[in-house]
Image (spheres, rainbow, N blue to C red):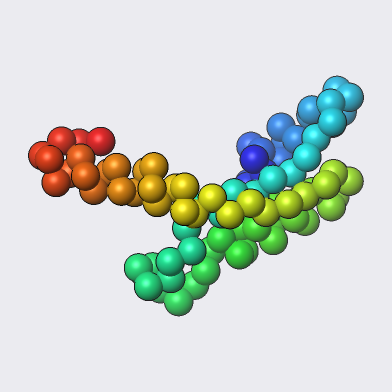
Length: 88
């Protein structure tokens, strides 16, 4: 994954320097704006940051939408555990 942050950017750079084939992939895990705390959409800014890093490194880049899987496997599980009185 390439988040556009320092850790993933430096890691991609180091791997590329070492001769590995590096591909930048940004995972979109949430898109339900009805439950966000503001009108901002931070994943778009984050994705754009990651794209800029990929361009600077000269690596392919793509965004993959995993929001359905994230909701089913993480969010639904979390609420189910809380409803059962357990901390997930």
